[in-house]
Every structure is written in structure tokens, then in C-alpha cells.
Image 1 (cartoon, rainbow, N blue to C red):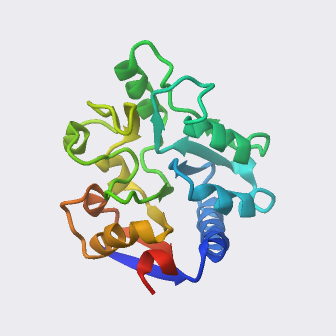
Image 2 (cartoon, rainbow, N blue to C red; image 1 turned 135 degrees about the vertical axis):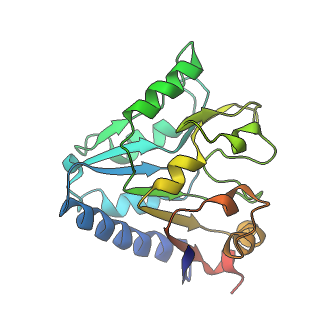
Length: 220
């Protein structure tokens, strides 16, 4: 496994070039099967990319899953789902929300796992300055989950527990698309590219991974 690194000059170019790559990946899978399965992380990086794709992808042939979600009310501005709905609501895509409103969160995680395909076609991941990806966060027992496709963090992270896809799910993905932007990600990106397994992101082992970053994150 190796990481295909592509450095862009700024966040705008990053979003545009990554969108072109994702469109190609979706089209390639559409030629083989439908629906195409795409999982999007939260954070700030994916939405400019998605905006470039809103009117050029046949979203009716795509299922969009969440990589992770905070356990917060649906009305909360912190809910990743709000961004997903804003970006792709009404596009025709089948949007599949993580059931973080369930009274029994463990049962909700199990149900979400059952809704996932055997292998996701494309998974988008961001990178935290602390090296986390999805909601696989440092020092949480969720990092050791190997027998479930979806799990919950044991402890609050930045104030909230999270529901997240686990390493087995990420590692089985046909393609992983990393988007990394900003100088605060420079150290974490360097460690990711070195394959540093001491950070959560360094343990993602999907066979095909491409990293799009801007010059600030790379240190160029």
C-alpha cells in the first residue's frame, strides 16, 4: 500500500482537482455497477469539493453514507448531517444518516453497519491536526475495534461522543480520498505520508489511497 500524493497551491484548487478525481472514480464504478457507494467525513474540507460536483454527477445512482457523526441533536450546528443535506439534499442521491438520535446508540451503530455495502467504493477522509481521521481519535478504545463496521467512541472528543466507521470498513474500501488543507495539518500530514502508525490516520490500510493537499499543509 502506498499513498498517491497530489499537492495543489490553495484550497480552491484542492477542491476543484479533488472533485475531478472523485467524478472519475464515480464514473468508473458506474460502468461496473449501481448504485455507487460514497462515504463522506465531516469537518470543513469536503463541501467545496461536493459543490463542484452538484450538477455534474448523476447522483440518483449514488448512495452517500456518513463516515462519522457527533452524538448531538439534529438541530445542532455541529451535526455533520446538516452539511451533507445542504450539499446534496434534493440532488437525487440516497443520503443515509447515522442514527445518533437512537436511544440505544449501540443498536443504532449495528443497524448502520447492516445498511453499508460489503465494500464502500470511495471513502473521503479528512485529517485532524492531532492525527485523527473519521472519529478514530487518539487514546480512545474505538481504535481497537476490529469486529464491527461501525462503532462509538467510548469517551467524548471535543465535547461529544461520536459514531464512526471503523478500520475494517475503511481498509476494505476500494478507494480512499484524503483531503488535507492548512498549515496546522503539516505535522500530521508528514506523519501520515511516513506511515506513522502512532497516529490514528497512519493505520488506514486501504489498498488504493490518494492524498490531495494544499501547499500550506505540505509546507511548500
